[in-house]
Amino acid sequence: MLSFTKVTDNDEFQISRDVTLHFNFAFNRVIETLNTLDSLDLDDEDKINRCWDALIKEQDYTSNVGIRAKIIEEALQRIQDNHSYQRRSVVTPQGEVFVPPMTDKGDDGLPKYDFEQDAGAIYASFFMQYHIDLLAEIDKLSWFKFSTLFENLSENTPIKKIIAIRSDDLSGYIEDPERLTMINEQQDYYHLEIADEIERQRELEANGGELFGNL
Image 1 (cartoon, rainbow, N blue to C red):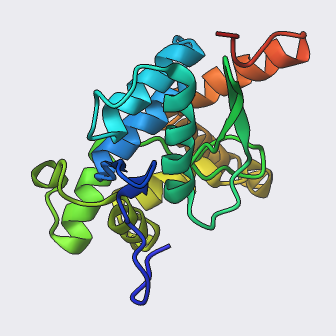
Image 2 (image 1 turned 180 degrees about the vertical axis):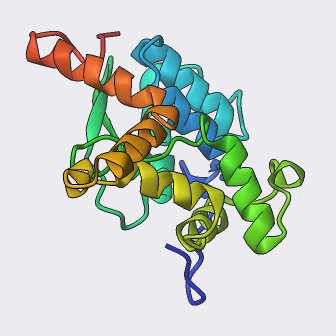
């Protein structure tokens, strides 16, 4: 949450009296981290190390996965701010580290947008409303400013229109078959690939599979 009275993108994390690390909270770095956490192709150790590479400026501070995980958890808590996201965990040799997924979800528990798949629509929306070229803001625009601007995009922007289509309740068109067909086709066209991955993940959990492997 952006604030005019307190620093929301503080990038310093004091490890000890003599050691201070710095987080890189550029919007593209955070999005890279979220994509890493959502990946079903990476094990926990790979996720922790990739998040470290994306978010930590002092890359050589430690190679210990457990220590890296605890520091990444601190970074994610700052990214999460005060939003009430569902929490999940990554297992490390030192125990569980909780990491929050950052993409808002609908009533069905599935996300309504994906920063990777919807990159074009998000880019066009920022340019349309704010005249901001996100490609020119790589490693410059902070996640906290980006997320505030994203949340306040007009309903007339491309990404908000796509979110509205994905969120539309088809039951409201039962008496209008033509409209129902059109909305259904639009939802198929804008279907999120990550939603399929989440459904497969749910099936694994329901069948006793593990969401995360052990290191």
